[in-house]
Amino acid sequence: MPCESWENQPHTGREQEKDIISMPPPFHRWPEEDKRLWRELCESTYGGNLQRVKEIIAERPEFLFHRPENNVLRAAASAGHLQLVKFFCEQGVPLDSEDDLYPPPIGAAASERHFEIVRYLCERGAPLAAKYPHHDPLYSA
Image (tube, rainbow, N blue to C red; front, side):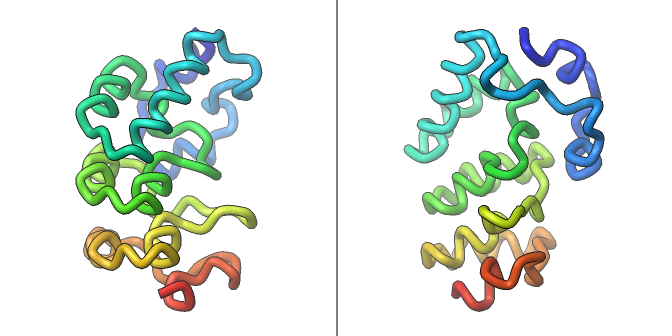
């Protein structure tokens, strides 16, 4: 398992992103089985397959908090899958992950015109102010 020391850490959200010591190793160093599962999680998320996503997360819960710059919540929000967005929020995936290339989940939903997801993320407390001006969810909407 590539993230053995990392996966034994409690996963509590935003502070997990900031703790560089607890971050998993880079993707290219993962065993092939872990890479396959991560790809399957991404495909299932984009495809809206809630059941398969739950199965993968049950097996590898650390995947919820890996790759904060391109996380599963953003993928679900961008693809318009409200049930997956709700599932990821209930699991504690950060609402505000963003970097200069990727907008926060609410910005991804707004840019794709998934306003029901935007509303839900607002109700959950997602910030409307983006760190980077070109990711501003209000502008995207």
